[in-house]
Length: 549
Image 1 (spheres, one colour):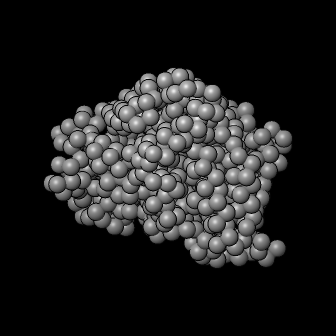
Image 2 (image 1 turned 45 degrees about the horizontal axis):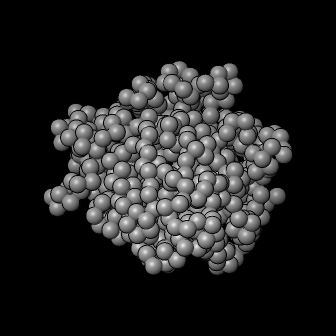
Image 3 (image 1 turned 45 degrees about the vertical axis):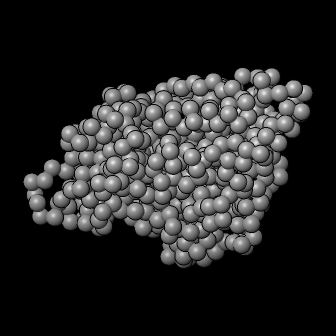
């Protein structure tokens, strides 16, 4: 068949990706291009970065990771067929050449000569193996649905097709052919996401636990390699000399501490023990943000992400939509961002960020609409045959241990009591325990957030397409919502597709399986000699181009 070059595909991708420029990568205080110049002539400047990632990663297996901490590490040590560059655009990475068929459903990737950190060659089978592994339901990949764009991936993940039917073909060691279910204009953004990363199939087939610790089994193909993992304490990365683009990488070492206290993190920064404190992987104490902003040291960036409370729609009384809406409408988001979080966040009355859908700056309902909340509460109590709010089953609001999450939970607990007369119990646990309970449905109301994996509204909606979807902890499902999402994936007209996604979000906000609280910002302080760090508009961070002057 006739092939068209990468440039055509990128043009199509950029045209159809919504507001890409608004979410483009940001390079802190300098152009990432200077990373190619290294230390700007100062040969004795140590190129060792010290930072904090707050907590133990959920998993450092690209097929199992599903949180920002895990992703923050994996993005430094693995690399997919493409990489999002400093301007937020997908560029060839492990793929040296990319061709697409005329119908935009078949991609042919020619791999460049590259090696794993242990010297093994990176081959097409490493990609095919990794994708099939993530799609296989027995491996319980929370992000398997990100592969549903690839032919038969959904059927495989739902157990109705064999993994070998996945639309990925190893033509030879250097050629990978991928067939999609439908044309997907943002597919090259997806191939930069860590679920699409390769895995050293030679090692993984011999040792299923290859990803549990640092060492000769944990091989990676990105700018850095992991040389130490002291669980719940620290991770140490070093420059990967087998990386194909190693000359661009100037940092020789990255020390990642796991300190779950913002005050300690900031003090370590002030003492010179850290070069970076705060978002995206660490945190700053809320009460110092105004002072840091005043003295000019605080960096703040709006990102495509939303902080929300998930409702377990199978646990009474949250199985009643009116009760869920009462709780959501009663929240005073403006008060939270102005008096609690203090980081310039935007109150959220929608789930898709305004950078992708401009009208979501306003949202689907009025903030702190207590009168409407009381109407929903009355309707919900009537549905349940209860006389008043005191008769409701106990509601527990859960969050992972963190000062900021605690303050938000306490504020909302007070709002629900004051405005609705609903008593709420608070419960907190460490991240790894917390997220496991959330995924297993062992909660009623749970704090969570979502940062865009790629720059398209569907990424914030598709989480809830299927009741048993990997990240759909709400257990909510709606046939009309699902149909709109499915139809949007085959709709070639961009305007019609956009409207389908807006209609889907309207259904979602009417049934309220989550209560959005605010749209995220990243806030951090950094060593001013550190240049070339790229924090994207989606909230992730890359150190490939970072260096100290």
